[in-house]
Amino acid sequence: MAISFKYWNECIDPLDMQALWNVPNVSAEWEDAGETKGQKVHLSRDPDGQVYLTQTEMKFHHMVVFQAVAEIIVRRHFTGKIDAEMICAIAELESDRQPLAQRYDKKAKATHLGIMQILPKTADWLASEKGYGAYQLKGNDSLLFRPFENIYFGAAYLIWLSSFDQKERSEEFVVRAYKGGTKKATHKSTLKYWQRYLSVKESLPSRKSLEGRKSVEEVSASLALAKKSASSQNTGGTYTYWDSVASPEDMEDMWNHPVVSKEWTLTGEKQGQVRFSQDDKKRPYLSRMELKAVAEIILIKHFSAKPLKVSILCALAEIISMRFLSGIGPRPGIMGIEYSTAVWLYREMGFRAYRISSADDLSKPFVSMYFGASYLLWLLECEGRLQPPQYVIQAYISGPKNVNLQDTGPEYLKFEEALSYYKDTKDTKQNPRDQGSCTIM
Image 1 (cartoon, rainbow, N blue to C red):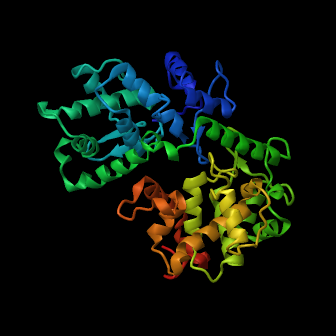
Image 2 (image 1 turned 90 degrees about the horizontal axis):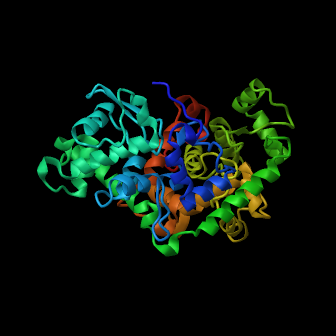
Image 3 (image 1 turned 90 degrees about the vertical axis):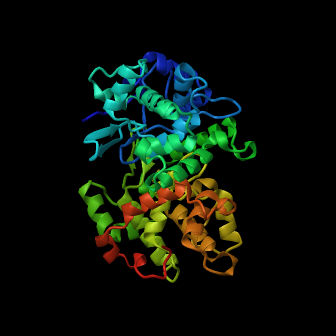
């Protein structure tokens, strides 16, 4: 089923579009990204071109009641019947908020579709037999790729499960039944899904304490700073060039890397004028091949005797920055290292292979990778002994004070998934940094 959306306007009705523009946090995020009310709004895409809903678009926030897709659906159709946070957490687990997600179910011999991974026959049944008729498929299964329709039927199914067999059911029953069916709601096969759901729900912005949440003004300022940084790097028309953010020595190492030089030559890049790839919003990012090469060069030149792996650094970059040169949100650069942390590592811990003069330096891939590796090493060796891998990864992602070894949490699960992108047998044979039992993970 080949479906593709480029704009929000292509997958939601004008009324729904207006409703999203009326959500302060959504409109602020869109305007910061250069979108204009009354014009088509681009759907966000990751560097591999996959459409996804941002946290702001998908979720609503406590206190200021920032409403978005899930909250609009609940308010319109299910007030008092379901918690929008439940919808958001399940969408995160089912599809990672990707409207075009598809998964074939061999047992059901059918394909789960969209953000909530709804089966078309389930949506038809809810509409025709259970009275949930605000949206109708009428044989057009592709409508389930539209966020509002999909979330509507996902919420309706959750509500139906909440009173399954005319009994008031617990949240645990509903969530586990959503995953495995009512017969598996108490089976061990759905227990891990329930545990992951609790972790995701706890991590939603609306669940965090007010002390730990940034204000809209702070988020907007961070976005503006990232945009300014990216703009200052665009020295060659619409492209950002590697040569403007990497030293001549680092560029020589990249050109001497056989895989990099081959790819750059095939794509027509020339020494002194190597362009970054960019998404549909003109945001520069590193390909996975380029990211691996940067990690390999940094580890070989500066950490050759240390127990660090290329694949670990790359997986962290994948989930923290999605490989975007300027990072995502308030965490700058491909490794998401804060400026204050980099300065501390440089001044106090002696990691001085790269100078750090301003926060803009962290948008340089080699600088960010170096200080990311430095911080990872410090976490690994802190308190005078080697820390377990799970502690190190959780501490890097969420901060040392937020580590919970009893609960891996959604970010660690995403890290494990990202790790699979960089554990290629052929590459591992070529890369000694990913061999041996002494290295982390």
